[in-house]
Length: 510
Image 1 (cartoon, rainbow, N blue to C red):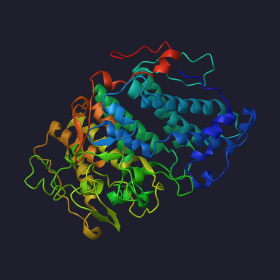
Image 2: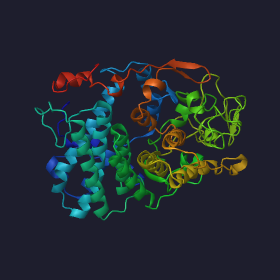
Image 3: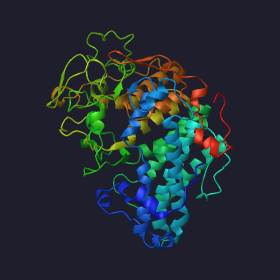
Image 4: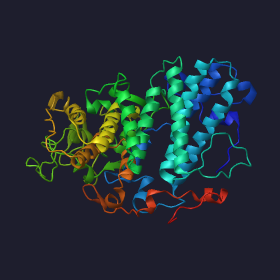
């Protein structure tokens, strides 16, 4: 793998305290030149080094990963993969590899040096736990896409770059070991984190997600049961569903009790992003409509009673937003009409559908969105729990109640003037493991749409060879997708890395 030299000033300047979560830390000036021995002298030094890892936390760009499924379309980097251009030289392939190994390098450097600092074991634990979380997730992102990968737990010297890849089982074991240590350290530490910091709950949410993914891929009920058990603990941890689905993804939702972990985008100069401009119709402040939903997503939303629109007596294609699950209208703008959205006029451009989710109509300045990006939230944890237990035991009233709670929340404040829309519950009678599985999968798609998670779901459900071999359609056809199974389920190692490390044997088909 590409070798990185341990230079402290480069680490701090490149990632540094500008990636901190708190607004107070963000305003501090970075350290620009240090000797390594002089750095680890205080808790402030340790905090700065740990803060560097927060720059790798998923941010709004993660939304584009949903364009690797049938529900979204992007004009950015994922479009080449979606249309069959996946290769060892693809930009996203190279960026994922180098970015995650950069995070792993920084985590290893931290863990090798923190013992130099004059901190108690409890004080060290809260930082070690945060850093292990980042190392675990970076390794898992690589494992999920590339299969066998080099697991690196030390800072490599210049002559140590040709690392033997670990098997999937070995790499997964390393990931879970890091997460277990992180959960223990963060539980044991004297630690009251500010919003946006890694907590034991965030580490548990990541572990639950990973076990769900791996349990699905391996058809392993032991992993699925463990995923559900961890999800159950989080569900008892004091979190609660936000009472308004729309607000959860706008600045009003920042700090919500539903959020387990968010990437903080502070309302400070230099900390803005351009999410509104990426997603909104071009009528709104000359926005770009570069990441948009497709008709495949529109068609996933059932009618108000939870029945698929293909069989619903309520559905009328001439009025597609009438009598539908209320989250449809909160996620996608109705393309049949111009929308006055809290005083901001949105006019469809006649080519693309447009996301309503995430859009803040109060913004009046181009490229200055600052809503936080939710990384883990209770809604996903609920769905982890339900899916895992259905695969193990089949449907139950408890699991169905959780689905109905999410559906009910979707109607809160969703009517005219902020009135609630009553969403009738789905009944348990007649449901089987297979039919409930389809309800749960549909619920994941519509509840988590455009949150950058669904590619991993489609991948583990092995649905990409069917959903990604047909055109993406908005109001008009957008592109023709192509996916070669089973080859494309495992990405090729980057071309430069295959040259640097001959121990990386290309996968079949690459």
